[in-house]
Length: 268
Image 1 (cartoon, rainbow, N blue to C red):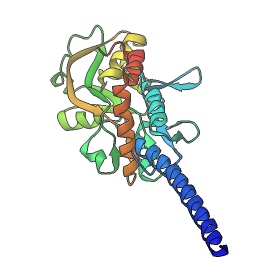
Image 2 (cartoon, rainbow, N blue to C red):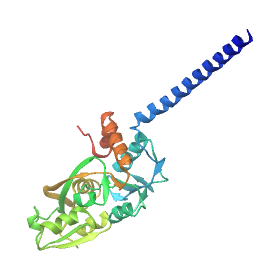
Image 3 (spheres, rainbow, N blue to C red):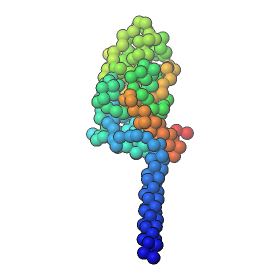
Image 4 (cartoon, rainbow, N blue to C red):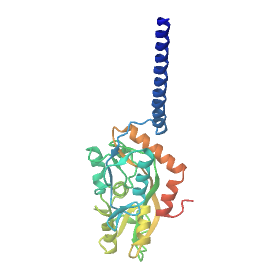
């Protein structure tokens, strides 16, 4: 009788342990499901993000605050992917962004960065998030410059370290290229007569002319179609994948269109 009682107590204890183990297993499974919903990526809690501060309307300073299409987009991507932006978004000159990613000073960069084979050799890129191209800006009263060929023998302002500067070097033989660190310097050099034309990314040229440009106009066709991508320091494959998943979700749920419409007008 005593032996049967001991066995019964042992069986009850064993059943209790199995029930507790099952509950614990259920909690672990729930955690795994949460990870799966986020793509099961191995991400840091936060990442350093860098941008430019003069590429309107993508990123620029307004009332002491960094604003723009890129700034809102990367903020939405970080929230969707489940990581924080480490402190505030940092800023540097455009030509310092890629080197900063290479040296580990920054981990993510969003600054209207064109995806090129050369850059892909030193940093990783997200899927494209904006289709752009290069165009020419001249004074409104200029009737002599209407195409790339018309820039032969002219002084051309563009941005230091940009694909526009590379494009001019590769496609013009007789030229004087004046590269500037800041975009307002590029346009001002045309406005004050120091340069015959400015060559830069189409959305920025059009935005500047519409909001700030003092007697400038865009001429000619759009050259060298380019896709902008978010640049990520090499060795962060999970981060690249998480950003791509988040970007796809923002397209699907309409968030991307809302941000786009705010800065460029209707995307329809």
